[in-house]
Amino acid sequence: TKSKITMTVIHQMELIGSNKIGVLPKRVEALQMCREIACEKDSHLNDSSFMLVDLDKIVDRYNLWKRELPMIEPFYAVKCNTDPVLVRILATLGCGFDCASKEEIDVVMDCGVAADRLIYANPCKTRSFIAHAMERDVRMMTFDNYEELLKVAEFHPNSEMILRIAVSDPTATCPLNLKFGCDPVTAAPKLLKQAHEEGVNVVGISFHVGSGCNDASAYRTALQHAKNLCEIGEGFGFKMNIIDMGGGFPGAEHSHNPFEKIAETIRDAIDEFFPDTDKRLIAEPGRFFAAGPFSLVANIIHATQVPASKITKNPADDAEPGFMYYINDGVYGSFNCILFDHAHPVGFPLFDVAENSPSMVSTIWGPTCDSLDLVEDKKLLPKMAVGDWLYYPDMGAYTLAAATTFNGFSKPVPMYVMTEEMWHKIRDSCHI
Ligand code: PLP
Image (cartoon, rainbow, N blue to C red; front, side):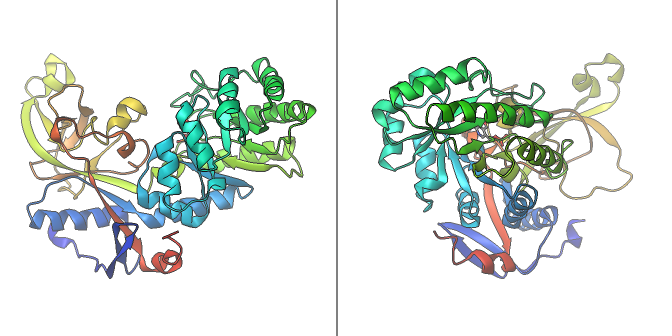
């Protein structure tokens, strides 16, 4: 089908920060755009992997958030993907930012974001980073333990602290409360008292039900605790005016636990526990914004035929052909999400294959010399060849952020595209 690809005429190249953006006359599906880029690369014998970044999708996600949860200000969790164009576009749209380190604070503020749009959401902070937050006038910070209160009292007397409680969806893909969050019933009231005694200003309650939430009722439980704790905090004279609902929202468009359902549960819980509230409601979505706009395309750099039994581990498959493919991105690169984010990326051939091509059991390996570098196993694929491309959608969350160049293999190059219509809307403000 490569010969059938008609190339979209890229109207012009623009810059966001120092990053080149291809401006398209109209919306083009990510898959189609990736095919066009791959064709172009093939014509130059360029087989490096790339990440298509569809910037219009960031705006779609932002609009979806505003439609479903207009009362909650999103503070994008930068750890999820620190791509500078993603950060600038979200900043332009009016997003706040959740930062967890000095560097994340600097990345966001160096894009021109004001300190009052940041929350330093890490309950166990480095002392020098707290001092840095003070220097840059980032005030909102989280805590969940007494020792942190002492650090903050010493290094950031102007801070506005938000108490993080542990309320978990135990079925979330990545539970976070083993490490962070205090018990909302026993420890939290005590910490509010201790903050009062140490002269630290507490302004609200935060929680994170776990990344990749599967059971939205955890948000309701957490909001119920938040309501009680706000009353206790007010008893100590604190103005408890911030409720921070953390992350956990799905990133892929067609999630088994749709965002709309989670949003409905949250809206209902807000009506129940905070009716007519004048509190500032915020959240820290990460994968919600970052996953969908990024599509990864990797090249098959090697293919070996093996007995299928080598892959299935079933001697009965000995006579069947199986294939081991090696691609130029792996678990040391973007696919680190397999190890760190419990992700199961599913790729498919970028170009259609003949309808009657038989599927064969296959393994997809990353490029490094490590057997841990396994991307997909026991996968049914039509026969592929060296130089063919595999396409992995929804690859923006917890991928590039932790990717390395171990063994000398580069990370995929981001290729940014946006429509002319979007460029006209944001061009004057995306250099903030
Ligand atoms: N906030 C905090 C404090 C986090 O630790 C994380 C993820 O680890 C997030 C927000 C983002 O979570 P998600 O990507 O599930 O939205």
